[in-house]
Image (cartoon, rainbow, N blue to C red; front, side):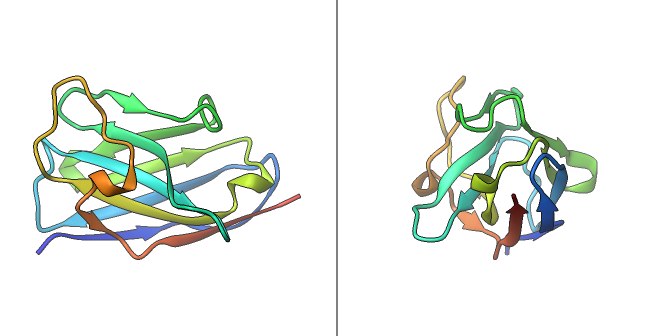
Length: 128
């Protein structure tokens, strides 16, 4: 059974940094895509950083590009989200998810419905 467990959330002041971690068990994810998604109160879940493991291609929406970085340590079965210059609008529950189904070469899945297994999330609150 594939399981994902997020950690590293918390309260941080605007302008600060935070690193989220996602531990993946039950699968070697060499050919998968991993995504970090955010769900703010009253809003739909959205992709904030996605990574195609086998080719290293990434997806970042304009709202976080240059501030967020997704990375993986395959040997440790870990995926990370480094967040810097945090803003109040970055507040939300952050979820890690894995896409195990085949997808086209060069494409990075970025929508929630493209992902197969989810963690339970970790809360990030940015105070202004």
